[in-house]
Every structure is written in structure tokens, then in C-alpha cells.
Length: 71
Image (tube, rainbow, N blue to C red; front, side, top):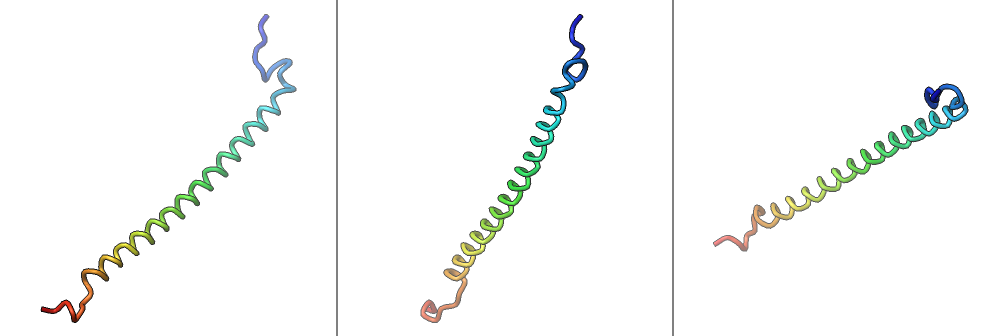
């Protein structure tokens, strides 16, 4: 007769280890997701600052009134 499964019969001693492994894996997955979200938010802020400074350079160079440019 075949063994019915790992959680029945002789496999009961191993079952808690699989559960703890699953629990630790789920916790690390959630932690990694939180770190990824934090990294993405910092990246978005840095990109916003970069775009702002580049737009400011363009505006200062082309839209600012300079008396010496008058013809």
C-alpha cells in the first residue's frame, strides 16, 4: 500500500518545517515588495527633480527677457 501523502502517516514530523519555510518565504516576499515600492518612489522623485531642473534651464535660456537681446 502506498503512502497517502506527506501530511499523513509518517510525514507529520516534517509538516511543521514546510509550514515555517512557507511562512518565512511569504514574509521575505512582502518585505522585498515593500523595499521595491520605496525604491520606486525614490526613483520617481529623482526623475521629477531632473525634469524640473531641465525645464528650468530651458525656460531661463529662452524665455527670460534680456535687454542686450533687443534689436
